[in-house]
Length: 187
Image 1 (cartoon, helix red, strand yellow):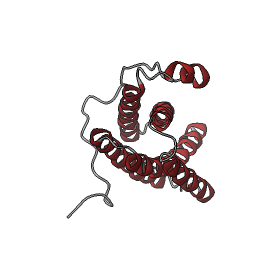
Image 2 (cartoon, helix red, strand yellow; image 1 turned 30 degrees about the horizontal axis):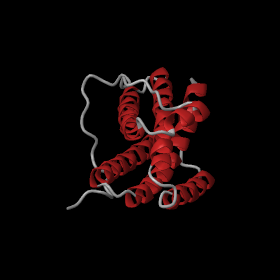
Image 3 (cartoon, one colour; image 1 turned 90 degrees about the horizontal axis):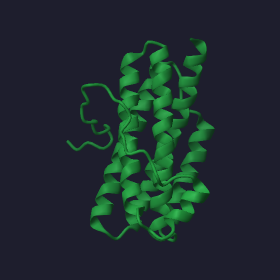
Image 4 (spheres, rainbow, N blue to C red; image 1 turned 135 degrees about the horizontal axis):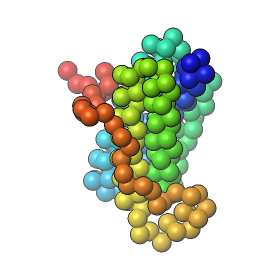
């Protein structure tokens, strides 16, 4: 049981900082795209990443754990760098790598849910499975954007992503819409 708790905390600390990097990267990514529909979709994804970060932080706190300061600083720099680079990389590469990153997030949240289940933390398990489902939706959005691009076959060969399973991960029977994080809601 201690192993499951430690592993859950390790995954959540990584996810918490990863969501910071993702949010910053998506802010830059959103500002770099010219199509209004893509901009709106990326902004929605950016908000959902903020919700995930907030919830993961709450779960960490309930486990008497904290984010890692060094990792937070590192991921802040990575997120900012990626966000700025989106303005220079064109359309395909940011969309491709965002989808590939989201693919990893699905697995990360599913693994965290398995550890929560092993600990009997059913509410956390349910929340983490919902987050995995939402990350899968993000992955599928980015896959849809890059589908048919001439560089996709090459990128699939090199980076092993681009032909994903389109099934959403299993989630609880009742799925409520994710709330806006407190910092994102308007009075």
